[in-house]
Amino acid sequence: MNFSEDRRITRTKAAIREALVSLIEEKGFEALTVKDIAIKANINRGTFYLHYKDKYDLLDQTLEDIARDIESILLEITNLSVADFINGQTPSAIIIKVFEYFNANASLTQAILATKGNYALQNRIKKIMWHNLFEKNYAPFIKKENLLVPSEYLTSYIASAHFGVVQEWLENGCRETPEEMAKILSNLTFRGPLTAAGIR
Image (cartoon, rainbow, N blue to C red; front, side, top):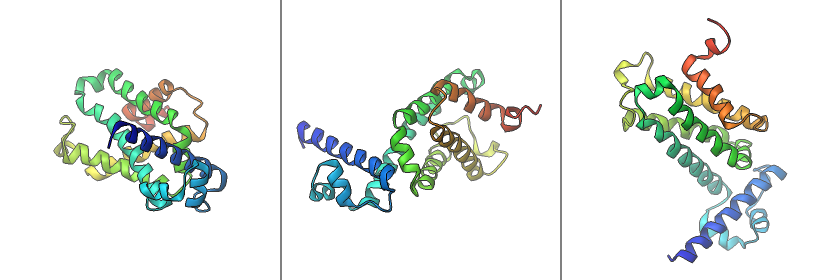
């Protein structure tokens, strides 16, 4: 495949994804058809089927792309030391990147969250966290033998809590800046919900 073909495929997929977002907002995922997507993206259905089996495959691949993007950002945490977590500045910079990503892709993410992809995306992120932390051991300062709770409950709690904060922010129209949200999430993560609630 040459460079111009590669760029054409990228543009086509971007148009299909934009059509998906627009149609979910307009009529909901279950009501839209491949024909709707093709018309909105200004392509023929044959072109759509070159890249996706059906609208469910399109949704699944879109979820996978988002999860992979989030994974690439979160993997930066694995390069940190315990000292980095204590000073809090470096983890905050990574959290800011996560919120900047969701802010830049707010329409796409909100459209996906309006479908059954809500749970699927959260589940993918949870599996990514568990795989990188406890199978790949990419964060050696987190040792399984030192955990106070089983690893699957820890990753489930972290993924669900963090994803819930991101979802709330998106639903509220991203009122706070990524920097403000990083501070909120850092307080919840490093100080705990009881301290964040003012209980000392």
